[in-house]
Length: 266
Length: 308
Image 1 (cartoon, chains in turn red, purple):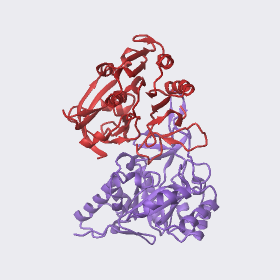
Image 2 (cartoon, one colour):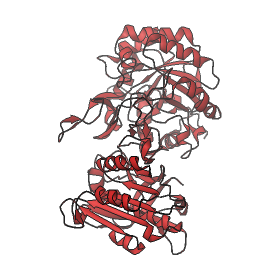
Image 3 (cartoon, one colour):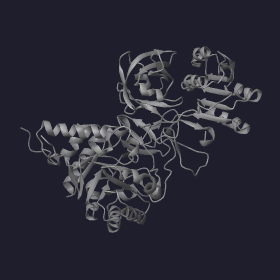
Image 4 (cartoon, rainbow over the protein chains, first blue to last red):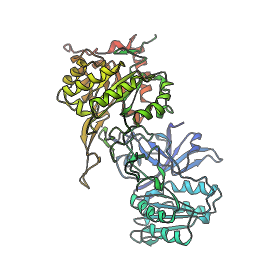
């Protein structure tokens, strides 16, 4: 089922402007892969006509291996997300999903870097979980999270619970080193290069990563966001430039949101 | 009571009057995961040109009050890929496939119409003289009665398919363009395309859309669309296909009563992909409850006599 009504299981603030939302889903939602997204309609948002895209943060299991729901991690940025925080346990939200492409989590990677900027960390716990399930050693799944200040460094407990190395940076020095997250990533690339890097975050962060990954020839995938109306390849609103300026645009909803880094212009 | 939802649009028989609008429904297949496409009266596929088109640079869409602006710029796969990759699937469907066409010159429209006429599985052509987001073609032909006449007449001489002409609301008087299209041989008129609009980011003072302006669609434009359908229906003796902000059965009924013989669902497909089939069901219930045997009786049934 691709279109369903989800019930809110919880909707809790994790920082001043970030919320953690648990939703029910039919069990076939278990086909969702890390990096995929859902389109959520927020009927209570005044004047918000279109659905909003959100990365799948985690899956919820019903005790066994059956999927019973999923989680979103969202930041309040506009009228849709500001209305979303008012949804309470038992309220329903119309969902389309899972949609889009995913990170290549099923390959036998030996060493992986996950790089997240701000709310871009949302799909990473799901990805880390899948990578470890594919027998990647936790110590070889190095997670880098950057943000403006300590409150922006989300999901730390999730990664600590998985036992993966965690490097933090902030713009203001309130947690981790005071620098951009790309600095420790670049240093670690030279010290002990991974065979894959997966990233999600602001475009300048992805552009910086593209610069030094290209020189080193490391496989990398990035998750990008774009304004979109439908999420399923009908409106073609979410066009993304590609490196060849004459080639057709790619579309964040059906070609993405996860792209091999060399496929799009960041 | 059995209800007859079928309609005749300029010689083309449709099982019901609910179609999906060009540019909002891809090439049909995208929506097969959400509904039985055969339940639709028809599918109008994404605007097609002779050659593939990249469309406009992003950002291309932005939400506005009860609507959205788009400046996609008619990105499409081009005629050859449409015939090879899209049409075979569409042919398997038991619904009318209408191909929306545009060109940068009168000759390009005519050539495209001629080449499509050789293809099986196309029920009608919808001539797009109303896209506000491309510099050449589209609205360049749809805002002027002589140009509109020239395009439609050229297409008419090169294609025997039923010809629908999609009109723009961005004109002073939609009835003059409607009459031009009718005189040039159109079999039906579909209206309205989007209303030109814009949005500005006050932080950067830049237009939100890279194209600066875009086309407004959604519930915000429904009253304007309804008025133009009503005007056009009175001005010409052709079936009208009503388009503009139709979100549900009530909206569809309003268009039929105003004078439309069929309707197209557009922006609503983005929000609830099964809107169009829900409207088919809703129209059936409306007829059953109102003891209306033939839905086509509703077309143009607007009551304008003095209120009691």
